Image (cartoon, rainbow, N blue to C red):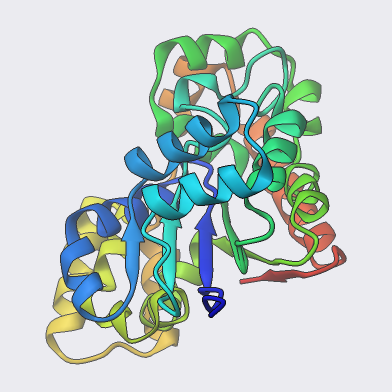
Length: 282
């Protein structure tokens, strides 16, 4: 009898604060998620399995058999694969004036290996300077500092995600912004994990985007009951954890004007994403 194809979600990164929080939740709650009916594989295991399957000259059937064994693709069981290093480790970000060098080849290789089994690809996105600053890597900061604002402005999330659209033509592409994840954390967890999403504390996705005072305010709000979206929007607006302008410029050379331009560029990217086939933007 032919096995039923499982519903497979691939979290393909990159290593934004949201993606890191999701991977951390999978890593620390995988047993509870499994009890709730979902196989959840953290980045360390998933990315290693993908690269092992792609490294050799395997046939498609051999490659899928290897992945099925390594990633526990059980019959009829939903699977969540966190592979936030699929495009490369954080140290690989922004080299040769590209957001991820060789991204086109890496995504095409992943698609050749995984497109037949992946139902949904999930990507996270935030303004470029927020992303680069949050990685907090001195060598990365220096590469950014050595670049012009024009070069940084040309970097595009929508270009990167377009490559996934081409490599995974039968999959839905779900792109999640930090704002959407913050305000709708509980709903997002249910969407990604089904009832197993109840094993997570929604605040796990919210805290990385708040200042220390914002985290304290969040706990006070939550103590009074489930907060309304309007309240969460106000909390994020008042206490959003953004790069300190002085520290950002000292680390990366990105000044206030460039930050403003990169914020505008991010909004342009979001508008572009809405026009891509099979893409759903949150």
